[in-house]
Image 1 (spheres, rainbow, N blue to C red):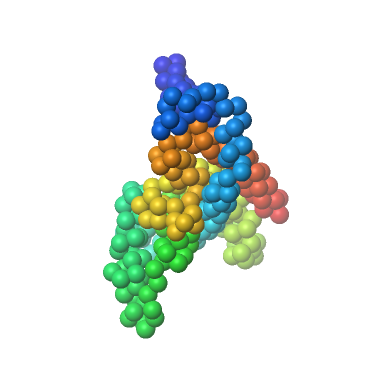
Image 2: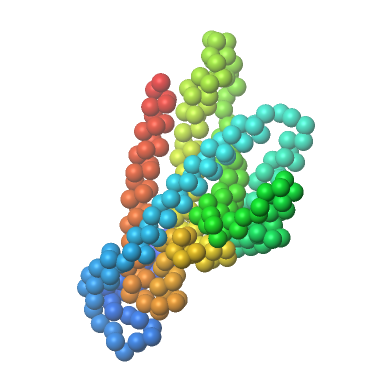
Amino acid sequence: MAPAVLFLMVWMIVPLAMTVYYAFENYNLMMPTMRGFAGLGNFEILLTDGTFWAALGHTLTLVMACLAITVSLGLVLALLFNKTFLGRGVARTLAISPFFVMPVVTGLLFKNMLLHPVYGIVSWAMRTLGFEPIDWFAHYPMFSVILMISWEWTPFALLILLTGLQSLPEDQIEAVRLDGASRLQEFRHIVIPHLGQVLYVVVMLESIFFLTSFAEIYATTSGGPGTATTNLPYYIYQNAFFQYDIGLSSAAAIAAVILANIFAFFLIRFVAGNLNAGGQR
């Protein structure tokens, strides 16, 4: 185990240490000779930058909206696909297939084939029904990004929750039905508590990936229009590769790590509290 653990420590700690180091340095690639210790200067610039706060708000909006959609829709689909019906195997395969599409391909698919104002399938359907097509990424950019990422990650929630449902003992379901419990009571007091750990895993893993969403935004809106879809990863990318400000982008990366830990802490408490309350009821 020691070589693997050592490799992982080097793999994670070295980039993190370099990010922390550069966060306290004046380091712009356009001015390589003007380097020096910046103290908290990069963080002061960050906290007074309106774009940073907008990116922070967009990040939280994206994470919460995508979590709500993917977990709720994934649970509904998992309950559906847990039933026996003709063609269930084919339907399951088709339902989880969007998860295997690469993020950049997902962005291009939505941008050029589904939501394009002229050539998109949605625009064709709207014209067929007599409505005027909409340039979704221009007029509803955040909604379009949320829709795109939710389409990509709902199959993940479906797959994990379906696995959890298949481990639910049949004798428990039969017992509560014999006791006269309704379908809603069965769902609240048996299914949800049984899926507690599974829901926890789904929420935590999806939160991590939603906080780091980048490729879908890069391939569709490039953070725009303006800064309408600029989240923290894209904000860091812009500072590093457009303004070449390594110090400021490193400070933003540290802020993103702190945000991720704070978000995870409160999310764990929220999910655990609700699951415990549901189990007690």
